[in-house]
Amino acid sequence: VAASSSDQRTRAAYSTSKAEEYQRKCGKLWLSYRECIQRAIKDKGLTEHLEQARKENPLKEPSTIPSRLS
Image 1 (tube, helix red, strand yellow):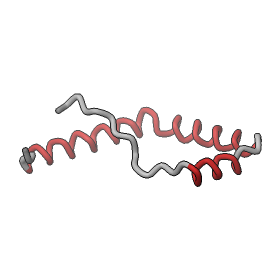
Image 2 (cartoon, one colour):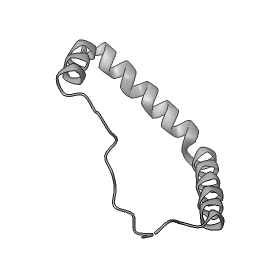
Image 3 (spheres, one colour):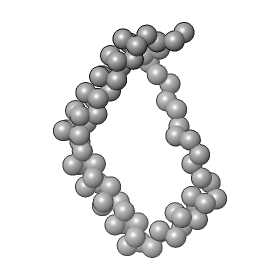
Image 4 (spheres, one colour):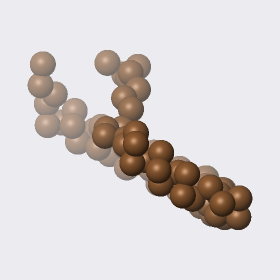
């Protein structure tokens, strides 16, 4: 069943609102955490291992999480 354009607009507005909320509440923390992890990976010499793992087992599609809204 196709969603109506009104439903799609409502969902898009909700998604935008949640993305903005995330950026306000967690955006800086996430960037700091990510930088810390990347630095640790580099410092521990794991960069080449990660590159090899990505070549051997590439992520072709993001995982799907079942929606509770359906």
